[in-house]
Image: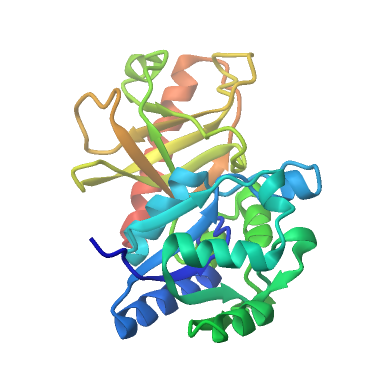
Length: 301
């Protein structure tokens, strides 16, 4: 069987924001023109972790990025390379040649600031010249601007940390989301007559500002439910400092333990606070549910 030909967008794609969207749409266009498969090449860990010896908190882990690319852009062919010292020190020409040979690339699509190879010596212009000598097209996508500034993952991380979810979503082009399997919790929500599903942010992924959010929960069957989601350390019930994500689905009854689920964050309602009693917390949950319902009624999503 002949190897598939790929129109390949390359980058890390953290958050898969509207700047990345320009690359992914171009990959789809080139694939259609060339009779190829739109594809993405990314890395499992952020290169900065190794290059600068510092951990970069991500908007999404590899699973999340792959799911967003598939769901929002219809690209199923996503390849992850393990970024290690061998890859970091590889001459840029060797890296480009390896990718062409292994993935049968007929078209490259990269961002204006994409660098690769030893000491980051490879860039879009060098890749374009390399590609031209092999009869391969190469598109370099210019920066995407919003509100007078370049859209970047770094900027969006700052928005998420500050709880500016609606602004972050504008820059992402889709709701900020968390993918996880529902875990068994402490069943406190049931005692409050507001049963919740419990999820966690993967290690290395940025945690939004602690507080309560209007969110939507998407189930594997495609159904979505509005929800009140608390991100934080549950100070009323625990002092272990462990961050959890607890969502009370509005209008849903059932058991979701062990079910792979997605939470889409839409609106920051209030900061997380410690309550003096179950009764006070229960009353606040009812107010939060009303606030989430009102938000979605005013701004259908």
